[in-house]
Amino acid sequence: MNASRLGLALMHVRAKLPLPVLRGIGWAVGRLLFVLAVPRRRIALRNLALCFPDVPAAQRKAWAQQSFVAFCQTFIDRSWLWFGSEALVRRRVQLTGALHELDGDTPTIVFAPHFYSMDAGGLALPLNTQREFTSIFATNPDPVLDAWFMAGRQRFGNVRMLNRADGVKPIIQCLRKGGLLYLLPDMDYGPTDSVFVPFFAVPDAATIPSLSRFARLGKAKVVALYSRITPQGYVAELGPAWNNFPTADHVADTARMNRELEAAIRTMPAQYYWVHKRFKTRPEGQDSLYK
Image (cartoon, rainbow, N blue to C red; front, side):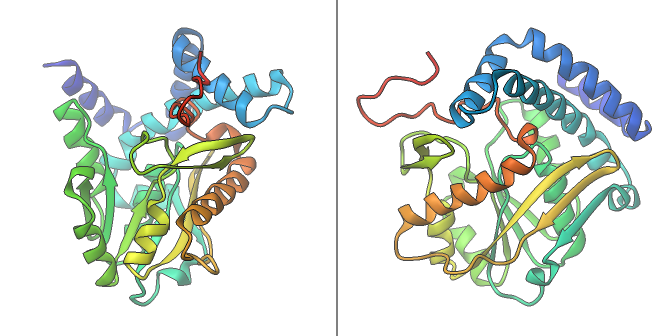
């Protein structure tokens, strides 16, 4: 049995453990990783310093440490999210907010940025609507883990996972048929198609404008889903549809997307995906921010 299959077997076992026990394991592993995973710790601390230059360094370090804990807790929670019973998942994952936005068949894009709890939010939606549900994820290089991720994310409802290589056409087809698109466009995906817009204190963060473009092509409204880890499980809060979005200016739309995300991050700064090099792509001629 290779390491990935052994890990999945352990996840089956963990799915049966009480939630406080799982969270305790995640807390211990997260604290340990904060010490041992030096490159990722440096990235998280650098991101927080760039985004919150006026926050004391001690507070940023505490957020980074809490972020590692949240990362590990949410990863371990995939045991019961993807192997536990539907009744268990419904009990621990709550969908709140503007649920009326899911009614009808208006094409809808769910802006679901990279909070560590995003997979819990991704299950909350198909548990609460029968509408066709499409999302885009990158392929994991480990085929065993990739199959696990895909099966877990599609276990409830009418869900179809698309590879980025599948292109735009199936996404727009789903939207125009009245489906939901679960979109995570807030990472740095490199210079191709990116625009440089502000994100916190960084004035030129490379950001893909896919939210604006898909909304325009699919004639879709946009709602935000912000997922939060809690002692009882997860709460995924659905916001009302954004007014005056999209516009004819995809750059201005993308800057607005970042402002909306900033406001959400400020409510739970330790739960955002700070271990990613969010600012690795720089405008031509500018030095790396991670040297």
